Length: 344
Image (cartoon, rainbow, N blue to C red; front, side):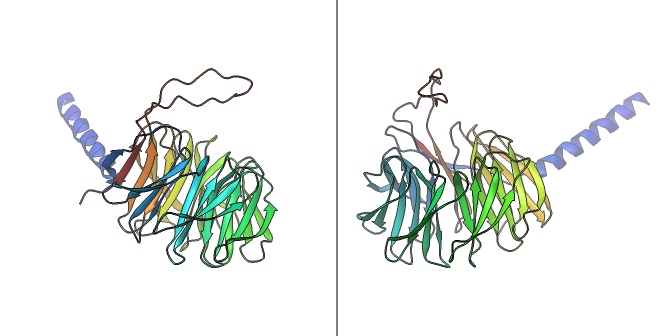
C-alpha cells in the first residue's frame, strides 16, 4: 500500500513538473556577438524596415546589421550617448548625448550628422511620435522634456515634467505617457498642446524605468527598479490592474502585440517574460538568463526578436563622496550584443 502511494506521488510530481515546463515562452539565446571597444552603454534600438541596430557605446553609436550583427558603421562624437531612434519616413534619426546636453540628428543612409540641437541637462531616453511628427527628449537630471519638430529640427518647447523623466510611450492618437523615476508616477500629456492631463501614482511601484504599452487593451506596463515590480495600469484612468515580480536593476520594457508578451530586461542578468491572458489578467511565464549588466532592451517587430547589450564586468569600486554609487569595472574588449528569440 505504501509502495503504491509512493508511486502515485511520483507520477503526480512528474505530471506537475511537466506542466510547469509548458509555461515557458520558448525564447532563448540565438546569437552573441562581441563588438569590442571600451566604455559603457545604455539603450539599443532596432529599425525593422532597413534591418539596422543602433547601439549606444560610450561616446559613439555602433550601427550593425540586425540579422548578421555585421558592423555597418559608427556615428561618432555622441558624448555620453543614451537613446537613438531612426525615422524611416523622414530619412533621419535622433541621438541623445547625455554629457553634451544636446541631440545629434543624423542621415540614416550615410550616418552623417545633419544638425545638433541643444537640450536641458542630461538628455536620456527619447520618443518619436508619428501622430505629431515630434521627438520628445526626456532630460533626466533637469526634470524636463524638450519637444523637437522632427521635420525642421527646431525646438518647439521645453517644459517641466515634475520629476526625472525616464522612458515614454505614445498611444498614437495624441497622448504621451512618461515614467517619472523619482516621483514614482506616470505623467500623461497631450502631444500637440503639451498640456499635462493626468498623473498616475505607481505605488507600491518605486523607481519606474522601462515602459511599454498595449494599444488594443489600453494597458501600460511600468517596470520599477527599487520595488522589483511590473505595474500594469489602465491607461485611461491610471487604475492598477496587476503587479508582477521582476528581476533586479530593470531598465527596459517592450510589448509584443502579436504574442501578447511583455518583456523587461533586468541588469542582474535576466529578462522577465509576462503573458497578457486578458486585459486584467497577467502572469510571469518565463525568466530568461542573459548576462550581468544587460539592462536595456530592443524589440524587432519583424522577427519578434529581442536585443540587449552588456560586457564582462569586474569588481565594483568602494563608494566615495564624489561617487557614492560606483558601477562595476568594465573589462575592455568584451562589449557584446545578445539576440533572443524562438528557434525556427
